[in-house]
Image (tube, rainbow, N blue to C red; front, side):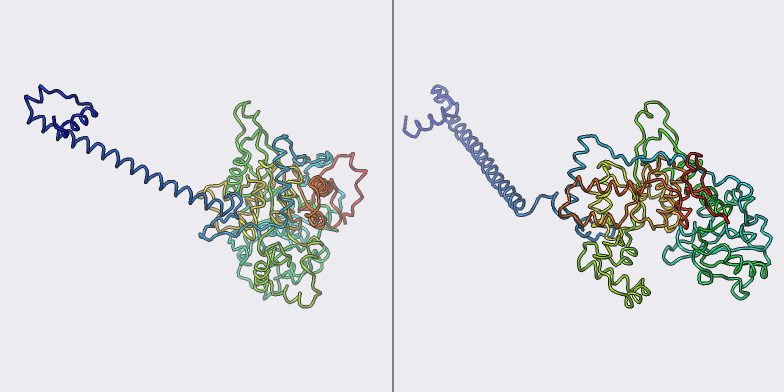
Length: 599
């Protein structure tokens, strides 16, 4: 056997083939062909194995390079959670990074809220601390006792009063109630009030688009005569030409009843009609006869009921926040009417309890921020933007500032004249012990600065909702482009909230909502009012104050604002109805109540 053949046989044996000479001898030509074919086949198999091995080596090198590139990028920038978040708004524009003024306090607040989650602690501000609140009961709808110094008449014999109210929902509400009192005072028939169209509010809604007309007229029947329209013979009159048009410039702010009797009554009797154009806060609160004062309260708290469309949407909002309705209070019944959420069917649902919520009215819109002349941590760009807004929208303010002494933004903040930012509101809520999972309903218009301003608040309290997030687009669509109707939804949800927190006590919405909660809420409708001047002093110690000290001072500040007090002379009955003209009190409280002048 040749050397070549020996090598061939060894190679064949290595691959599992046995050398069988007899067969090879018999079929030597055929065997040689088979050996050639088998060899080629195994060469192909071996080549295929090497090809796969090469592929895996190349793939491995590729994956290593990819992971190395990712690791390089991760080392060169911080973790995603610490990036300045840049969300995109509805227009696709990138939002600005979060604007913060109190980084240290925010960090301590976040730590404190995390600890409360483990300790299962709850804020004590879900209830009013004083039981004296429950001793005051709503009773403005009761008849005025005889001998109360009655002034006014319900017959309407002296002519007609037409009121065109300006402003938004809450300014219009005050104008309506004042008009009712003036009509009774002058023994005039009141035409259902009209609402002026405002370039600011841009809402064409009239009385019947917001309030129930028949219910309003029926509730005040016997107190003042009210009709829907002017009689035909008066509709074509030029009120200004005949001297019957009275503007806010013609009558003093907070005017007294005697001003109307001496200045308006003669015009009414002469022409048979008086048109109050832009009628707003033109009737003072004291001294006013008790029957007229009570009539204003009756109008505000009893006669002005929202139309079913608004009540239905308000009911949906409340139901979706609370989730369970183990109990319903008088505020719910007054504001939601026949659209009260259905109570739970079984005891199991009642045992779950309803989900409490806090309503927060943030007054941090661009117009208010600009008008304040304060600074809010936005730097040079913010100052330029707000200055440009003032020059366009507040020319009278700019002229006045040129003639007065300059007051720095820092001094304005120290004086308590700066609107609270969402960040400051979040710190107050954290200081009061409200837990991170608290449901917060945010009322109000667009927040100045958008999400860049809201992130400090949503970072501490992520369960923040609005009417836009709670209602579907189809449920919200009937109210779009009607700012007063949207404000009515905010009014309902704020008034029926378990806790209502305001950032500006001068706001009409906050004032009227807090008054409703005082009138109907008893001791179960706490309202939180931070004094901005004292709060500014507390926040000014951001760099050094300890969290426990911050909590103590904020709680003390809010507790003092919750002390049950009777309405003081000259104060708004719409905001502070706790007085004999509007509410009935327990005899045990009479020793604390000073005598009041009803003439």
